[in-house]
Amino acid sequence: MTDVVVVIGAGSIGLAIARRVSAGKHVLLADLRRDTADVSAKVLSDAGFTVSTTSVDISERASIDALVVAATHLGDVTGVILAAGVSPSQAPPETILRVDLYGTAAILEAFGDVIARGGAAVVIASQSGHRLPALRPEEDELLAVTPADALLALPMLQADQVTDPLYAYQLSKRANALRVKAEAVRWGKRGARVNTISPGIIMTPLANDELRGPRGDGYRRMIELSPIGRAGTPDEVATVAALLMGQDGAFITGSDFLMDGGVTASYFYGELAPR
Image (cartoon, rainbow, N blue to C red; front, top):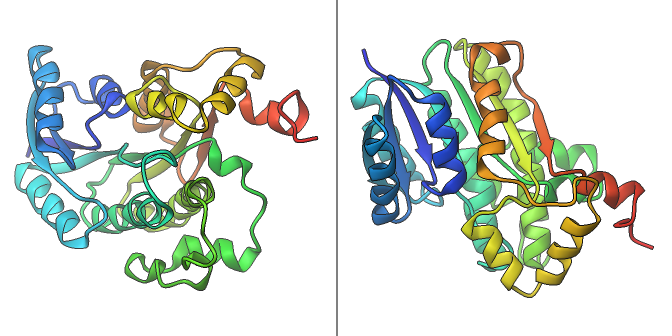
């Protein structure tokens, strides 16, 4: 059987990771916009990868289920890269929760039922989840283990509780790491692993939207006052993902890797700390 790597979100980060982990495998590129997936597929195909494309809306269970069917028809799913999402400047709170929070949970549930032994997944979360104040333990547990299709009915996620897009994004990304930690137990029973990467400002179209958006000054300040003093690149995220998805990372699962140039460190202990 052919090994299949499913890339959900055919943008800069997903494409960079795919190039690092997909040699000799069939890459299934899935994106909300099929034309976006097709453009990325040509880049991979020209570089010698075997690629096919499809569309997926990760806010809809039926669309996710159709993606699982398409992937398993191609072969054994040995890799999943979830890099799809929307940012606070791109969508209202309800859309962010539906895509970034529910979509991640539903993807992990669905692919956790079919992932092959020895397989691995990486979910792209965000540094934002690390700056959200601590939730109550019972809230953490609800975000980690509530069945995906019941998540958006939780009282803590209702419109009167989540009114700000940034808070919706931070909450979603915190939930991603919690969900991965819980799902790692179930994936382990299939001999597979799953981890989260929480990048800082990585130069992608999404980041450029933020830099041009209402929070642009804050983003530039984060870059300038971080210990590294610059934004990251998709290839740097791909380096960490390759470790987590490969044999060198075989002892790592259920973990979240913060890579933000030290922005979070500066937020708590440096010049970015709230005064």
